[in-house]
Length: 606
Image (cartoon, rainbow, N blue to C red; front, top):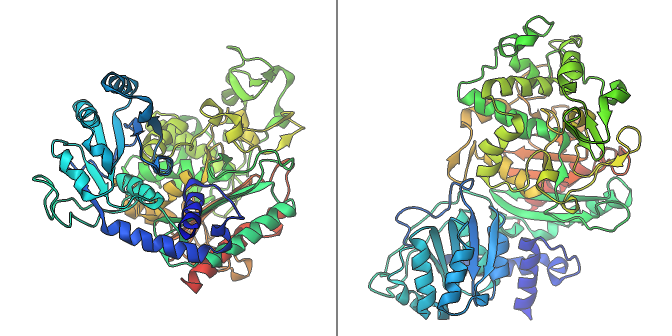
């Protein structure tokens, strides 16, 4: 019975099923201690073979089309669930293909995949048709073989040249462990303890380094899970007080995801429960997650100069009061720009249509299409002709990031949404992050925001909440990005790592340090990033956060905060603007109090 409760707990942790009444929730520390003990045994009996080409950990996720094939392996669901934390992996049940001709059919089904992960139990390694299937596919594709069971199962695999992850233990935890090894969430530290064949001799094996997030229990990062129960209480308070209908909380400590829970529902009608895979409108988190990421890369590549001006990068700005505004001033919100321009209040009946056409191509939301060149004719002139009133002082302005988008697109000749997808999100393995989510996902995966009765006359679900970004068609420098918690964690673990993730250097470490440091005497801000506030009475973003902390909030009720001192990434996603805008989330200090609870748990230790 003890094992059942442990693995039930494990499934909840890794698959994201939040079952608050399970044994895991009632006694998490005891169960987690057993999980950690089991994990140590798995580490000692997990070996990587045939990795001369260093294919494991898998890199180049933007080029991979990955399939997972299993036959009689009992924990394939757990295995595939963890694979999908790193990149999109399609599962195939090999049991539906029996006999030589049927395995050929399976090969045909796999033709559009260039990487195949095959999991076998120890009895299946003696199945010659399966080994022939592996070797045949290896001729044309990348193949990874994962073997669970006794080391004697390796003997029939001497003819296999594909990388082999072998782990002796056959448990739910070993399934999650092996999946993470494949993508570098866990390092391989052992070689074969004895010889099993002519090829697989004593001491054979390859060691690897941890390069991506690991998914584990709090105790693996030195935290007692019991001490994180306060997060549940604060999240439930937020929901009961109608500060938000639901939320997702994620915590990564020391490169390990130790907490990821969903609470409440998409809306207050309690019809669709929030899930950790749900996609949220990140609002102003776009500023750092898209626009500032691009600025860091372009600066590091020597393609953008922080001390060059808008007039230098934007021809139309030369004849305006913004000609000599520096890029640095935009990122610091010290350019003197007004917070925003007029949006729906300027729209005329002739500016929009209920139907799409060549004359009305810009989709704002369902049954609302803006006329061609509206941005060029109305919004861009409004931006360029807006007053400059407080230059040299800190005034938070969406216009800063709207102009940054124009600067960046002039440099890259690529739309911002496509650039960040190609340079960051896809190669990092971020599966939901991006602009315009309705082009890729069904509405039931996207958390709705405000019921906009005034301007758009619709519940905003999959369409950006911010009105300026909406009139830009959903892609803007200050808002428009959507993602789930796992994707946000991946992006900011990369930043916390100094720009490296999965063995790839996305940003130069000195650039990350420059942008995330306090940069001005006029405010707490970094370049693009918000930061810890030295006014201790504010407790921002948290009473216990270190002065090194950087991140950003979002108007829809979101935030990400990175604390290098604690090696911590904290994410809170919600839709506090549903069905109407409410300030209760801020009034109750929900985001900061949850962050405080995390620090308190860290301080108490294991």
